[in-house]
Amino acid sequence: MSINRSVRNPEVSALTKIALHSSQVTCLALALACAPSANQAPEDTATSDQTRIQPPEADHFVPSTPENLSWGWFPIDREPVLRMQSGETVRVNTLTHVGAGQNEEPVAYLTGLGIPRDEILEDVLDFWATREGRPREGRSGHVITGPIHVEGAEPGDVLEIEILSIETRVPWGVNSTSARGGVFSTSYPGFAEGDPALDIPPGTRHVIRTGEVDGAQVAFFSEDIQVPLAPFMGILAVAPDPVVGQPGVTVPGVQGSRPPGAFGGNLDVKDLKAGTTVYLPVFHPGALFYVGDPHGAQGDGEVSGTAIEQSLTGTFRLRVHKDRTIAGPRAENGDHYILMGIDLDLDRATRQAVWEVVDFLVEEKGLTPPRALSLASIAVDFRISEVVDLTQVVSGYIPKGVFLR
Image 1 (spheres, rainbow, N blue to C red):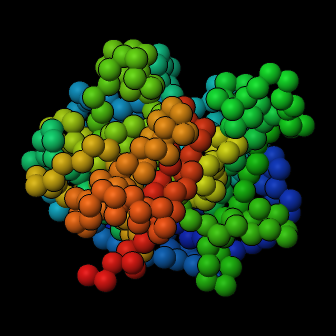
Image 2: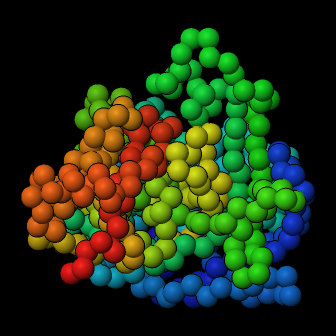
């Protein structure tokens, strides 16, 4: 059953989406939109310029209030924000770090970017007010909701995360670029002394409006460019088993949220959106599910270091499987099985992804290793999902259509 930090059977709806064009977006947003709510159902204020989308009902609701959030890590001994049964559904509010983690007061910071005051979620302000009391050593910058305890989950089990819906909470997101950010960072493995830097002013932030055009959700990048909106959670995780010396672990018991790993985490695989199911190995009783780093859209690679960082609400069905064992994250949608390789080195990540694909084809489809590797080479696409979060992710997409039975 739910504890007092969650709400059971809420009447929750998605924020209205606004179809309006913006001019070239660099650092300032130029359009106005409706006011968002923080952690309750918004009013139905749909007009001719707005479309209301009804999300699926859920058994539980977890708001993004300060007591339900961690900052840049996955606590393994934190009291769960919710206890639920395997097979139940939960609707979870998440916050982008933009406006929540900087030193400057959030209203001043966000309105300085051109975001109207009535489009700033109150829970951003509430979280920011608690930041001084939160530990920072060994942590990253993501704002993460959880953990959610799933009854019956034990180490060695598999947690299935069925992504039922993801909706935007505000009609804007932010992408950051810098001369030495993302793949152009001097700490990036591909950097060589003498490499030129891009001509980008320090602290450049691109505020990007989102809304609806002809029934399709889009990001208004400029008057001439519209990017299809494809919201997904960059972080889907179970509580990890951190060991000092592993990527992102510099403090005993603290797994920083920047690098993904066997526990999932900051995978930034853009296809982990509504209609996809994710599988993670369980390391602790209850699995302790975390979700965050919400994105409105992202290209494979996330090469600037950020996507459209945009607060989202997700609805998930969580199931425990006791008859399976997996070593790391994997996923599937209607068209593909998705197997992931994660390593500090992109070449090693690719090798691991191929190995995972071969193992899957042997174990799940009954192929021999030589036939599995042959099929991997002629039918499976290996995509670079992200390359900017210390450990890098390569995903092997196995097309379901090649299997006749």
